[in-house]
Length: 369
Image (cartoon, rainbow, N blue to C red; front, side, top):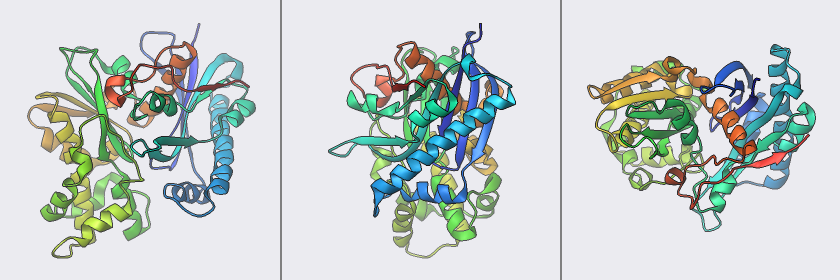
C-alpha cells in the first residue's frame, strides 16, 4: 500500500510554489513527482510588499491569503493530473504557506504564514495540514527551522553531516556521528536574499544565475567586516530570521558606512562571501570535519558553491543533495509532506534543541475537505 502525501513550499524568495508527491510506505521517502508554479509578477510584488509594515495591510493580506490558497490548490491539481492520480489516494497535503512576517523575538512574538488551507482542502478534496510554525512558538520556540527533524530522518547515516538549506535565508542542521539523536540547527543569516535584492536593484533581474555576476567582482574586506559585525551573527542558538531583518535597508545601512564607494559588482561578490562565510562559520563551530550537503536554490549558484568548497577544504566535502537521493530544489517540499505525515500520525514535528521549544509537539492545524 502506498502512503502518499503532497508537500507544498513557498520560501523566503517568494518566487513560486514547489509541489512534491511523496510515497512514505518504505523506510526512505520516494519522491514520485514534482511540479513548480511561478507566481504571476503582480502577486509576487504584493507578497513582497507584505514583508514590511505598510498601509491597509489587513485587506491586502486577506486578498493574498485567498489568492495563494487558490494557487496552492491549482498546483496540487496540476501535480495529480501529471500522475493521473485521484485525490482520494493522497492521505494529506502539508502546506508551509507563504511567510509574510516572522518576529519570534518581539514582546508579542509571532510568525505568520498565509495561503488559506480551507481553500486548498475544499478545491482539492484532500485533507490539508498547515500553520506548522505557531505551535512551536506557543511552547516558547522560534518556530524555525522546522526541517531538521526531517533532515535527521533522511540524512543521519553514521557520519558528521551539516545539511545546509540555502533559500532566501540559509539554515543548517548539524548531525554528528557520536550523537545522532542530538540534532542542532538554526538560521545562519542571509542565503540568497541580499544577492537577489541587489541583482534586482542593479539589473532588474530576480537572481544572479550561476553567480556569474558575483564571480566578476572582487571581495571588499571592509564591507564584509561591517556586515559580519551585525549582532545576529553572534547570537547563540536557537535563533531564526527573515526578510524583516536582512533586507535592502540593512544592506544600504552597511554600504553607507564604507569609507570609499565600491562598484556594484564588488558588492555582489561580497554578498556571496557573506553567505558562504556565515554558513561555514556555523558549521565549523560544531564540527571539525565531515560532509556539507547543500539544498535550496543556492545549490545552483556555482560561484557560491565554489566559495563554500574553498572555505571547507580540506576537512569538509561539499555536495548537493542530488548525490543523496533528492534534488536540491525539492527537499523542503518533501519535508513538509513528511511533517504532514507526522501530524496525521500524531507525532512531533519540531526539535526542541533546535527551536528552543519547551517540548516536542505535534504541529499544525488539520483542515478536512
